[in-house]
Length: 216
Image 1 (cartoon, helix red, strand yellow):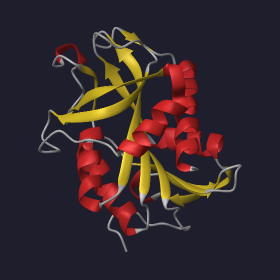
Image 2 (cartoon, rainbow, N blue to C red; image 1 turned 60 degrees about the vertical axis):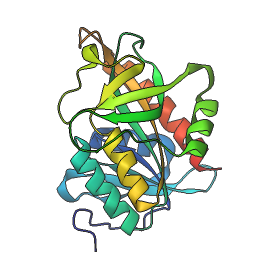
Image 3 (cartoon, helix red, strand yellow; image 1 turned 90 degrees about the vertical axis):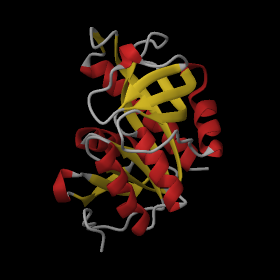
Image 4 (tube, rainbow, N blue to C red; image 1 turned 90 degrees about the horizontal axis):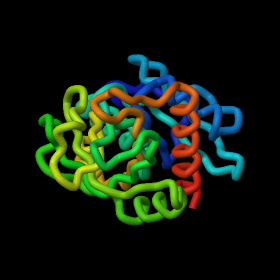
């Protein structure tokens, strides 16, 4: 039995990962038919069910930051998850626009949770960008172990978050296929931020794309 998750329902081999438990509930209601809570231990809400196409899918919260996310991913792998897409939020850098859907091509660790740059599964990443279409931007991000500092990002890095690099590194260790799409919920050092309703619309859009990719 995993150390952190205490599943009360079977988990699917495919999963969507989110940091926030509230986003897990939002996407479970949006993406699954008759979702059932599969975990509530440690406040890490998880839901499992079937998509409208009949495919099994799990939506699992990972908590805040890289260490928490990496530990949860290890538990998910032990429970049979083999493919996952992170649907998260980020702070956009100077070249990002508020509300952008950023498909991660590479993640650099800036706070110690991962030792080097990490890359996502190329097949999932390519299909994720194709599914999102013109609304997607593909590029590198940086992950911090504290509130991301997007205003000081290196050249070529689109945005900052708190866990993608750690998740990608851990996925490689677990031989698990993982990709990530991040919503730019703030830019200009937090001076501009998405309103809740608009943020939820972007979360649903990213979640629908992740579901479509995992269903093929």
